[in-house]
Amino acid sequence: MSTRTSASVRATSGARPPGRNTSGKRTAGEGRMAAMLLSPTLLVLALVIAYPLISALYQSMFRQQSGLDADGFVSEGEVFVGLGNYTDLFVGETGARFLNAFGNTTFFTVTTVALETILGLCLALAMNRAFRGRSFLRASILIPWAIPTAVSGLLWRWIFQSDGIANSLIGSEILWTAEGVASKVAIIVAEVWKTAPFIGLLVLAGMQIIPEEVYEAARIDGAGFWRQVRSITLPLVKPTLLVAVLFRLLDALRMFDLPFVLIGPGKESVETLSMLAWDESNQLRYGSASAFAIILFLYVAVVAIAFVKILGADVAGTKEVRALSRATSTRKVKAAR
Image 1 (cartoon, rainbow, N blue to C red):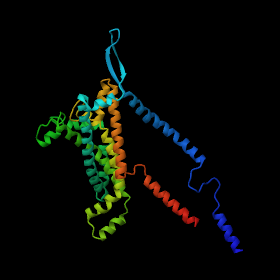
Image 2: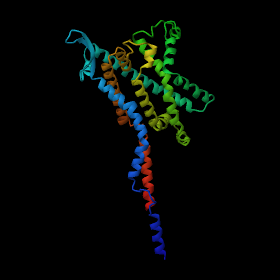
Image 3: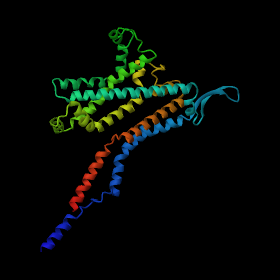
Image 4: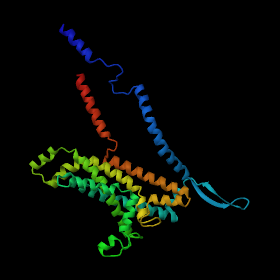
C-alpha cells in the first residue's frame, strides 16, 4: 500500500503541466509570439538606425563635381568615387582638418569624462551621507543636467565673454571664446558642470542598494571612511559606475551643440567630428560629410565594444539574467531530486 502510494506521489510530482516545456528550450509557439512582439521595435530600429546608416554609407561613395560636358557646357553632379572620400581623410587639407577634429573629439572625451567621473563620485558620496539639507542638495544638483545644452552654452558664453564674470573673478581679460587653449578650457568647464550630476545621480542610486549592515561591520572592524569607500563602496557600485561612464563616453564622442553654441563653428581649436560633418553638409559636400559620419559611427562603436569587453560594463543586465537563470535551474534540480 505504502509502495503504491509513494510511486503515485512521485508520478504526480513528475507530471508536466499541459503546454509547459521544462527542458528550458523555447517551443515554436513561443518563438512566433516573441517574434511578433518584437517586430514593432525591430521595425522602428530599422527605420531610424539601419536605413540612415546604409544611406550614409551609400552617399559616402559619391562626390559632388563640376566640369564641362561634351558640348562645352558647365555640368554639375555627383560621381562615384568608391572609397575616395575615405582616403582623402588622411591626405591634404581635408586630412589635416579631419585629424584635428579627431584629436579634439578624443581630447574632450577623455578629459571631460575623467573629470565628470571624479566629481560625480564626490557628489554621490556627499549626497549619500545623512545631513541637514540633503534633500535640497539632491534637488539642486539636477538643475545643470535639466538645462538644455544650447541654453547652457549661451549661459557659459555670457560668463566667458571678455567683460564677463569669469574674467572679473580672475582679474584678467582672457578671450575664452576665441581660438586657443582658453576655448578648450571653456568647453571642458561647461561640459563638466552640466553632465557631472548625471554620473553622480547614477552612482548615488547604486549606493542606495548597499546594505547598511556592511558599513556597520566595517566600522566595528576599525575601517575609516576612506577605507570603506575603497573596499566597499567602489567595488559594489562598479557596475553602475561603468554603465554611467560608458553612456557619457558615447555622448561626449558625439559632442556638437556645446562647442557650436559656446565657441562657434569654424574654430580649429574646438572643432569636433560632428561639427566637421555638419560643416561639410552645410557646404553641400554630402559625400565627404557622410564619410565623416561613418567614421564617427565606427569610432563610437569600437569604443563601446572595447569598453564592454575589456571593463565588463553590463549594459543590458545580462549578468543578472544569467545569475537568475542559474538560480532557477538549481532550484529545478533540487526540486526534481
